[in-house]
Each structure stands twice: as structure tokens, then as C-alpha cells.
Image 1: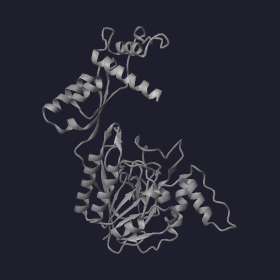
Image 2: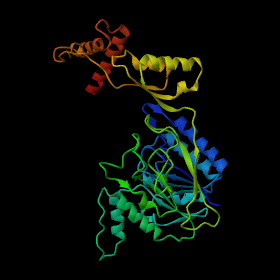
Image 3: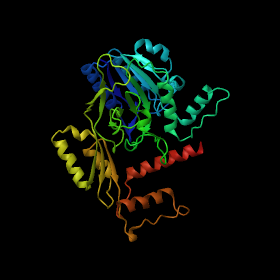
Length: 399
């Protein structure tokens, strides 16, 4: 009875604003291991964006990748593809050696038509690709007298359809056919604000019907779990942790299972299993700053763990709030302050001193008084810090 666990978009090394998420990512992956232990899947598929940047990953991200692949392959084989955040060649380095330990990286676009038969399934890796690469690949494979391949530089759907046809044309048909793909499938919602967009100006989308001939399609790119309404076997698993404050907070992995002896053309039973991490990402919106502080103080008094969540405090105040970020962090240590609207009366407009007749210190002091009130002045410590910063900047300029 083949059983597949589908996950994607780990984004190892990702930060949320100024916050390092290494601990949260590790905890989410530990919960993933718990799910693997409970579900006992025959194969784990990762549909791209293993890392957050294609090069110069933080050492912590590389260590996490090494640790988690070792832990998962002790339980089940892994099949992964690169996403648009991954470097296809780097992530697939020495893949011919890692297969012996159960780690299969399907990173080679030229070999994307070669099905990998594993755990009673035939798996095809369709890594993230730009249409120009697909056009060049098909041109190389065309006969000398064949017509040139016509794929527009932004026609991701045609490029994907050509890869799908190429893969299905070699399928043996003895097992359910699974595709791992990293793309923006039209109708699946908006691209996440933390993502590098593929869909630009209406171009870059792939239709769900283009992929629907497979028996299950494990998608990566969008961070919320989602299935196509017309083709529910074409699915995003979503990320394991939120990477933006406006990202959907519910996270999960997807389980797809088939009956014994299933062949091509057999759709699986599909369900999701939640992944929960202690520190959440949430937004406090449309409240006055004083209300946000009282909420934080109440949580702190009650020793509520939510006080340590990553919080975006988007306040409704329209007047300047002195030292807002510092005051906010006294009650919510992992918070970001946001004030969308700020009223400045015409007679309170900032009259900027002429830099040609005033020193940098005088310009800064005028700005400080404008923000904190006409009666406010820099203290001795603040003057010393400002002077030291200007001295260092001057030294860097001279160098």
C-alpha cells in the first residue's frame, strides 16, 4: 500500500524581518519527524525551495539540511527537487552518491522524463525552470530538419506542458505516476510576500490541467496548503513555518496513499496532518498603541507563551509615538512596530535646516526636536553616540 508524504518550501536560512528562524525551522522539522514516525510513509517528497538563497547559505542551514536528511533517510527515502530559491547544480552535487543512502535529488532538467520507480510509485522530478531553458533543451533534442521550438520567455504553461508530455511519453504505466513540480499554478491564490514571484504581470502561471494527467502532483512554491478545485490531486503542501506576517498561519504536510497493486491512472486518498510550532507568527492590528502594551503586559503577567510570538503590531494611532519600538519590545520582545498613518498638521511640518549653513549635528537635533517635541533635547549620552557614529563614518569616507 504505497504511502507518500508531501512537503515543500522549507527555506532553510530564512529570516522573518530581523529575526533568525533557525530554532523554529528545526522545531518544525522535528515535528515532521514525529509525523513520519506516526504515518510510516514509504517515501518523503520535498517539492523545492529547500534553502532560501541559492548560494552562500548560512552554515546553520547547511547543518540543518545534513541533520534532517540523515534523520529522514533512517525512516524512509527522500525524493527532492530544486525550487526557484535553490541552486539546481549545487543542491544536486554528488547525487549519484547520496542515492545509496536514500536521498534522491531530481535536479537535472534534461533527465526530467526519466521516471524513478520507488516504493511502488513512478516519480518524475520537474524542477523549477524558466521557459528559455526548456526551449533550449527541446531544441537540442530536435532533429536537424525539425522546426524550431516556439516557447515564449514568459510562457511557463507551454514549457511545463512540453516537459509533462516528454515525461508521460516514457512512463511505464505499471505504477501510479507522481510528479514533483515547483511552479505557480493559476487559481491557487496569491504568491506569498516572502516569495520571489514567478507570476509577473499576468505571465508565469501554469494551468492545473497541464499537470492533471499525473495521478498525484506534489507542488512547491506557494506557502499555504491548497488543492486545485477542478483537479484536487494537484496540490501544494505549503511551508512548515510562516515566513511573512501576512502568511497563512496553518501549516501541514500532505499524505497520499494508494491501494496495493495500484497502477497508472489510480488517484490516491489524500489528507493533511498539521505541523505546529510553539512560537507563532501573528498580527495585532487596528488597536491603539496603549492597548497593545496592555495586552502584552497581561500576557507577561500570566506567563502566557504567546508573549514570545513573532508579532507585527500595526497600530491605529495617527500621532507620533515616542520610542515606540523600544517600548513595544519591553512587553513583546519579538515584535515589529508598524504605524500606517501619521497626521502632521501644516504648522507642524518639518522645516529642514539648510545643510550648507548647519552642521550634521544641528540638522539631527532639529529632526529630534520635531519628532519628540520642541522642548526635547539630546542628552549627553545621545550626543556622544551621535558624535562617535559621525566620526566613524568620516573615517570610513577618508579610507
